[in-house]
Image (cartoon, rainbow, N blue to C red; front, side, top):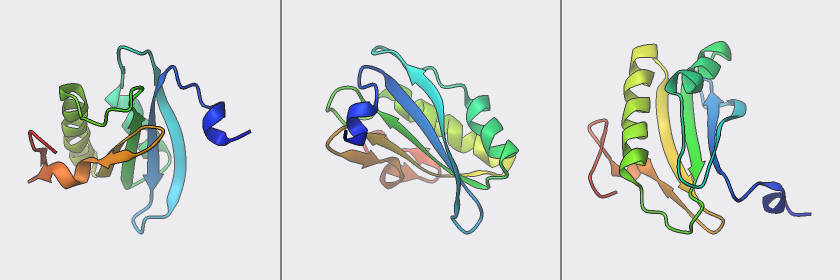
Length: 120
């Protein structure tokens, strides 16, 4: 059975990949499993895992249930808040990816001076 067939496609997933200073992956952790309508991401849980596992850099990944890759205002807000909380904790948010079954979008291309541009 293919891996993507094992993932519950009816729910949103929010993952964090924690890395050390040189980019070695320390862990990949599911932070939130969400409904069709919303993603409840607790920023403290994102960074609690990073602090506990000594990560200095993180990448976050979440899926869109539709095949649309347009980032929502919620996506932009979460990414901005992750950047800010990471700065306080000295944990760098390397990137935030939005994925679908077929493709992905990288938020870093939309960052300007540490903030998300209006249209990535």
